[in-house]
Length: 230
Image 1 (cartoon, rainbow, N blue to C red):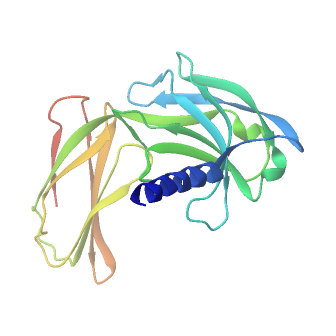
Image 2: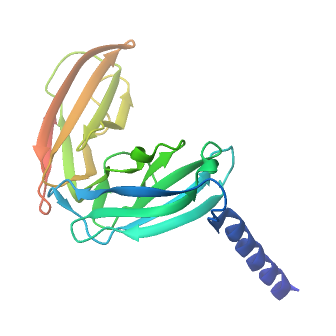
């Protein structure tokens, strides 16, 4: 009986997988969509070779695990470029979004904070030029130690610490209370060979009273560290 239940569970998992991810069949509204662009290591300003590219539809409705339909796969060339076409049923746009996705390889980091380990462009409508000249930006990953040092005397009741190495500041520490703050030492993953900016803001009674930005260019290896006065 236990063996039967195990087999039944395995078949159920397989059924759910097949139901949620199937292959595109292009019978009506079929168009060849040209997809082109580059996968770039912004730390070295070079392209990344052999990065897999997956193209698939995903249901945009309200669902726990939205069904996917595989459309095609490809890879970047030795210069990090890609240029290929896939046949797709353009009548799916609206209910489905067409996703163009790459994984984030080991040793690299992407430019924003989404928790999944991939970068995805999603298109909800059909405009042929939108699928061309896509840039996927990655950075060689390195580590940075940040130490905060109390040097100023003004009072505050909220302190927020942010950092960025690409285009987006991200908040990674927030303290509510009177100074000094409770935690002063941090280790973050950041991009190598580019400037990492560290910004803090102080608030008092819901009003921002001061802010400060410092920066450091982090090496790919070695002990990257910075002391930031607050």
